Amino acid sequence: MKIIRLGLSIIALCSVLMQTSCSSLGFSDGGSYGSSGSYAYNSAPTDFASRLEPTIASNEKTIIVNPNTHAWGAYENGTLIKSGMATAGSNWCPDLGRPCRTAAGSFRVQSLGSADCKSKIFPRPRGGAPMPYCMFFHGGMALHGVPDGEVVEGNISHGCVRLHVADAEWIRFNFANVGTRVIVKSY
Image 1 (cartoon, one colour):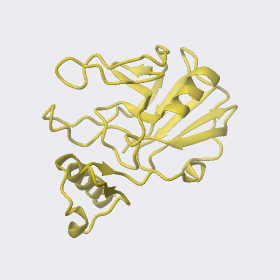
Image 2 (cartoon, rainbow, N blue to C red):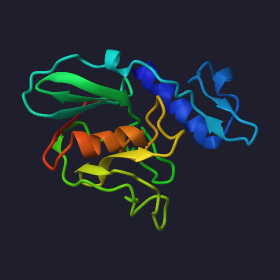
Image 3 (cartoon, one colour):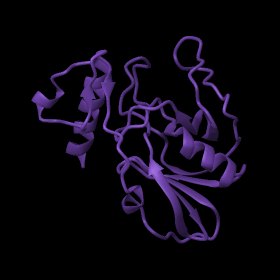
Image 4 (spheres, rainbow, N blue to C red):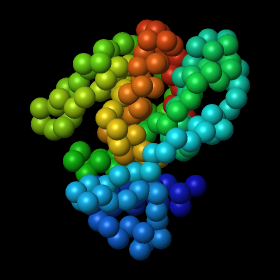
């Protein structure tokens, strides 16, 4: 497991540094560099339901995020009803000079944001990054949508859980309420 985490950390660091030689280190995440020089992860649709438990011991609405499988799942009456890709917090954030993993544990949705939700912190120093349909669950950590290409099979965020915008919108309007349980699995 430590080797997998190290590999994902190296992939994330390489993408941040825009190095094209990550594959020469023996790591590949299926991404590639485009003609503009920007890095694009392979975010082709995948069966994320197979990465989660089909049922859980709960009779309340629950959202589970698994940073190890890069998946989220919405459970109603203990049964998985919808799932998708999730990008959690990074082992290390160079701009902060510290780890920024998403906190593991059981939390509750504290607020429900709109399509216009924006970060008050990132990018530094003034914030303003789009966080459509943000749903804060632990301090400054939220489930939220991000633009295409920023939901990847890796943990590279500042601590929030990144979702495809359509997934965040579905959760926000069709599943979550203030008080909905959010479980973030340990890395």
